[in-house]
Image (cartoon, rainbow, N blue to C red; front, side, top):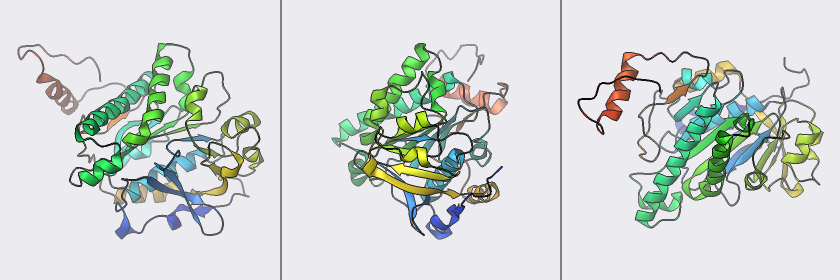
Length: 342
């Protein structure tokens, strides 16, 4: 239940009007409205400028963390067209937080993990790793350094920025096994190389204080920190040790946004934009629905991959035909086909 002292700032007031949807250019950076700082001042998540490339979000249950993620994903989908922004959305919670994006067939989504398992999470990271490699090859051949230079030279084939959003990301690291080692290695690579290739990671968690989490070196590379109400141990981790701002938050939806690696001078108090579920569904349904992507560095399947960890793996004829067709070119034409999984 929402606390009676909750302050609600409608996200609606911060978004582009209907005629301005899908008009923003992401060549140089992403600027996604997520709330308000000060009276009437829209606060945006800004990624792609200087050291502000990736973000960590910490907030305990009931702090408004889900509201923040929905504000961010929905704002991004309204402001940027699918050929300017791609999304990979993974939720490791026991819940269906990201179901709405599958139901509304979000055109920007390459992958939606509704109740992700660790193996699927690793597979999604490997997909992003492949995007980095393909873009690296493309940039080398064209002698360009980054996504802005590429888009300037190739206005007819612009590259979209890629937003990787992982909720409860620490689930990838709950066991000290080969999978967590691989996930850690790829995440580190995304965080180090993402700047040039327009790939931005947003990792969110109820707690950063567990024994298994991101390596400190990776965490140190993530300059944007957003703290909602969190426990004292997490408040110390998300910001620098001499920055107690995260421990002082009292109400759901209150946050401190910091793009200086947690240093005290980077603190920007804000309120997360409130987005009622019915309005979110209405907005998403007004956007063009169904997969749209012409970018060869990200689009490998021509459809959104939706993974629901609790659903039985039943093949329908259309999916089976698609899987066979996409594999058939490289193999013996006389092979006998059976499908073992996706």
